[in-house]
Length: 250
Image (cartoon, rainbow, N blue to C red; front, side, top):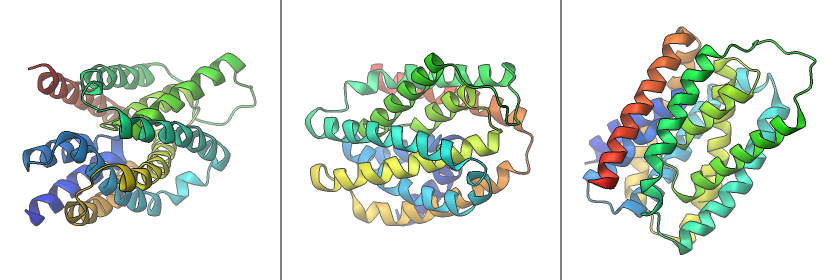
């Protein structure tokens, strides 16, 4: 079982660092091993912290390009994560499971939209309209709530929002996503440790795999074409949405 958890963590960590799709692997594996849904969610979040450590170690170059934006996005999501984690302590995530497939499907649509909605990838001096900034941060806050409450494929949803709203390259946007999910998952885990059950013995082997996968993901992004990667990520989101729709309704 330890080998299964490590390999699942390796694949999930890589997918999380590249596209925020860790739950395509790790969450179903935990369920298949007999972990209850809420505990699978919290255990998965605990292991994902290791992905964040690995991806940040290999993304320092991208994160240095715009520290202000990185901290703004992370701070807003962090506040949302506090609310989401508290809600999870008092309300089961089972009702939210029925909404998740539609959120992930929508994130796939956003990813495709970002591919065909061209924005310059070099800094400009034009200011963003206040209404756009407002809705951008509202969306990021809600993703933070989602990360704290349920979290499945939250990285994918956040990446899609950032791809549409930020004037950054895919590699930089992905690095901001990785940093944001790392700090939010870490805070959520601190709350989960006192409010819900975490299968810590599963976290260690899965977390070790996620650390390695999280480190390798950003390295790959620097050397692959962005356009096909976005399209692959979008259709992977559609596939995951279909799987979660089936498990939630049938």
